[in-house]
Image (cartoon, rainbow over all chains, first blue to last red; front, side, top):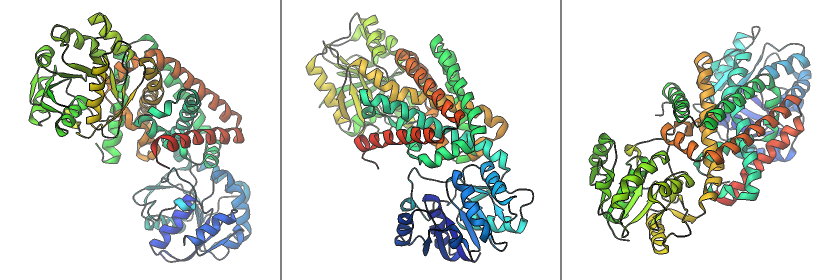
Length: 292
Length: 292
């Protein structure tokens, strides 16, 4: 793949990692970025992540043959509006949003319909750190990227976007927009909500009981994702609220059912419940992760 | 420290790791074990974890000058009953139970009072694997061990038990029985319950939606502790039910409060909630773990 000018819109952890990976793999001659934060652009230039930074989206995107939108999902509509006057039929466009229906809706609202040369994408990769300083050239290596093409997506563009993510080291899967949002609500969005809620509760208790001093490995694992960017996650929760809210309520019902087992003191039922959960985890490991 | 005969009661992950660590540090001349599972004893002997295994607790403990009880907390009363006829004033006794009030109660019920030479202990160390095969000589290195001595505990025995855990590489802290159970309910027991409940819920959904195929890092972190031993954790939940149940209900209330923020679509409130949780996690990391 030979890209003349790759334009990254939003130069944070993910946008920066796309830039670094594209440079490392030699897929583009130059990388430019747009960001509203001049300091972030300056750091991206100083770190050699991009060749040039622009405060204006249209200025950065004009003349680019590949555009990657890497802003929080709540900012997608504003980015589409800024891209509209310079939208090029010769380029391909993709994004990295963690929810996909909201991105498609934003494109429809602003552009009338989703352009045939925009392929919504979601790289399932990240760190609990934020900002271009945290960007890594191998962030996508061996990670899944889900593409959610629409019925009228240009097939040649789809294959070009697929080739792009493959060159960054990812495994690429296709999925419908609605299936993506349904699955990710369960495997990513709900766990983030739970982690934030538990850390919030224990944080308040820590102020009086100093409980963090004796936090075991369990809590460290749990709270790691509560280090994620609050702006990004407030956006994701609202963008995928229709999937997250019913699932959160099912989880509340699950806790309440367990609460009843514990209140009853039913040792066998508690044991069996834990054993079923452990078996489900083992199925997950056996099938998908190669761990034991 | 020179122990002639170290006796481990219950030769699983933790008991096996105590044996391996004690041997590696040269703190004892011989290690024996009692377990009801003849196959586990045979594996422990074959792996060189212990010198000899016994099916009877009294046989293993007789003549030992150090006894470590490493059975699930629900089995403590039975172990105290088996130790009663051979309880030696010359030895020290300690345990590794994850709850402490229940262990103290079991000792009182069976022995009349908690012997002055028994020091309840809880090493905050573990793996999601079970069994003597998973035992490691450095499982306690750099980990915290909490001792919960009672007012009538013999001070010389307390210092001997402290020295024992220090020699296994642990950092030793003293705490009251009730404070231990209160703190651990928050940092360990509740996270385990949540992990089991989430994994249980998603396991059922996976059967129809294949969601595990796209599980992100968040879910892997979360489900790790749902791989823990169901027998041990059913015991812990019942043993510390008086602390876990009210806390579980506070967590249910926490989720329900977040549910309301999400249903209202209040972006600023959701953002602030996440930002507070992230700040609490950062306090935890700054103070206790040295990570950033």
